[in-house]
Length: 116
Length: 115
Image (cartoon, rainbow over all chains, first blue to last red; front, side):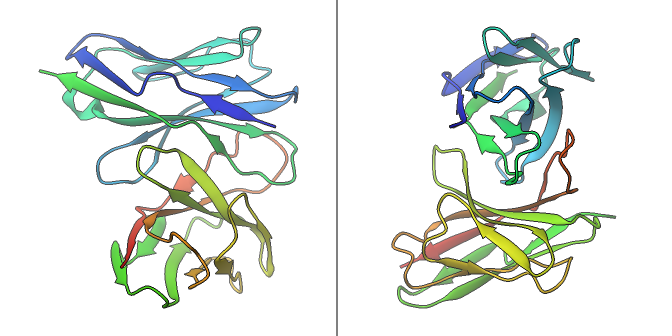
């Protein structure tokens, strides 16, 4: 069975500094996708960035980048130059590619607080 | 603008009543999903539908029902059989297919409180 683990319930970062949010996953499938979502206090889930299991390069999207270590089954999210608006819950998720279900398996999330 | 709408934002019901949560999308996505989120938890899948007139149970389907009569709409009914219905409900949609990435786009959610 697939599982996502986020071990940091909460993180603090100073504005303009970088922060890394950890995520490890467990799957026996070879083909899968890893996603990060941001959930502000309003509740909506906002897609941030994606990494495929066969991607050789770490994904980047603006201030977001992933530190993907396939052998360790980890995909940590790096947010550079933190802004006050980055304060939110962050969820790591996984989807098995080619599976019939298509849904995402979510971790429990990390609450990020950016301090001015 | 394309997106997903869920209504209402907040919903209050008495115990024993069925309640239907609305989800509409204009992204032309084939697949739609319902998730439940409890405080301090990630999202758990209730039901999903890959195509019109077809849907499948997710991990926590007991006490819920859905229909998919139109591509744009995927309403969720929380029945009186659901033992702990108070939660935040999120609807999502995505393109359908076996390939990557097929990210899911979410609606703003409905916060249901049952007393």
